[in-house]
Amino acid sequence: MTQLADPSASGGFARILVGVDFSASSQAALTLARIRFAGAQLCLAHVTDARVTATPDLMGGVTPALPDPALLNTLEHADAGRLQSLMQGGEEVELLVGDPVTGLLDAAARWGADLIVVGTHAQGALEHFFLGSTAEKIVARSPVPVLTVRAERR
Image 1 (tube, rainbow, N blue to C red):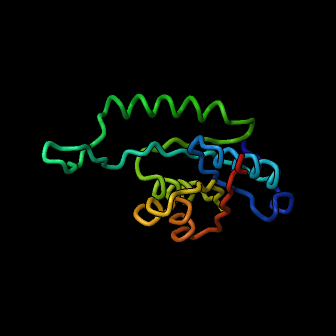
Image 2: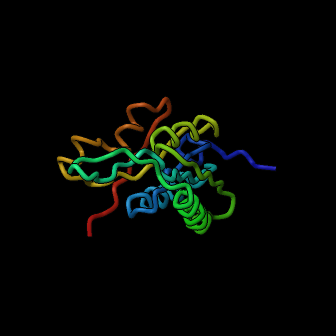
């Protein structure tokens, strides 16, 4: 039987979904969630990115390409092992495949999260202009509060 967390002991949040992408900022977000919201139930969620990619073509352009199913399976298996190694007692994990933004938001809704915690990465101006930030998109689309965490620069 899962015990319900005491919201008063965790800043008013009982169920916190932590987005994990194995980066330094994601590790900082997980560490902060464990310390700051010690009384909350945590779910570590990772999305293996399976969006359409592009490969160079013979004419000098790019052609959309779907990921190789065998490669995707290998990535999922490796990601599952890494996610399990991060999990601590009482925490839940969810491994998804697809678009990271949609995957994390859907996981948060299904699980009933009342807070999402994600790391944020420094990007170059051009990359940010064309792709935007996953964290920004989650903040913009989430119906529940989102806490973004940046890892310390070394």
